[in-house]
Length: 179
Picture: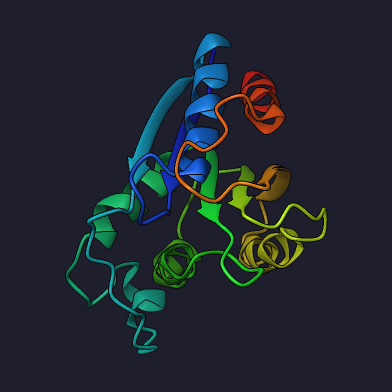
């Protein structure tokens, strides 16, 4: 039986390189018999957490925006994949805001176990995604049943769709197949 895979693309740019990685991962996961849903934060209204902690008691956020439907999908996914551009050697602000707003999941009976990170940046040094991985790791640390399952980095790309033959796309496809 396949897994329920949720891929969240956090880039504000249409057809971004991180979104290309997400698509490759999705194709791999689908080919292995999994159920896959891809969503994009582009155009969504996701407000900052206000730190009231009401969600810890109610498992719901007091802020009404586009976050709740995404959080419900996260709650029921077996696998969550985040795809982000790397800005100033860190995950996108959109991704960080979503992680902060997913606090109601903390005490819930969440299904997710494996968390992946797909990232892209203009700089191609192997150290470039490290801070984003560490930041996501801090979020994962709060969920006892979840683990960081892997990452793929596409370096040396800037404009959307700049390198359709980048080897990271094949790596993302293979990682998706192995879910």
